[in-house]
Image (cartoon, rainbow, N blue to C red; front, top):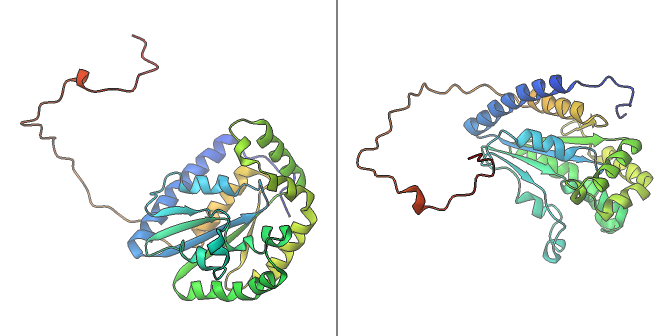
Length: 267
């Protein structure tokens, strides 16, 4: 069940302090993944405007993009539609020393494709049968796989959609599919329930994030992620920076270069 409006609010200073602490731990996790050659894939699913992008942004904010990357695939091409359904996602799975965050994933077939009629009933049923085995194959190959479902109430989703519509820097987030998600709320709910019935397995469970409160959702999800991947802090050797050796170098005159104007220069 989603967090209600009566839940105690998380103070901004407390949120920022805890987020900063968690981001330090994420850096430690990143270095451990790289050091041990781990392969980690994290799936973020949920209703539109549930806050998936917000938590992904906070996870990657301080991390090395060569270690942690986002997989956010566009709609399949004509060629990809002829392939084995999971094929285009396999190409984005982590190699040793990588953490991949899937901003939506192969579960598109069990959600939007099913509800909007973008796949046949046979393709949908085959997905439900094959998905658990596909994920077991990934885990047997050594991939650490975590799945998060962001749950948001219809009232909160509506307020976030309105904010997107009326806020210039967020307007790009709103799409015609968002309108369809409102019209088909019950259909999406039924699709989610059936998806869970088939794919919420003991080996690879769905972890539900109460997401009506964005700040709490971010803190809770990141904390859970850190708790489910054992890691240790990597201790770096002591380093002393040497003095800069400028012998023989003459810097080019400043007027020989073209500088970006300083808009805040008071002189």
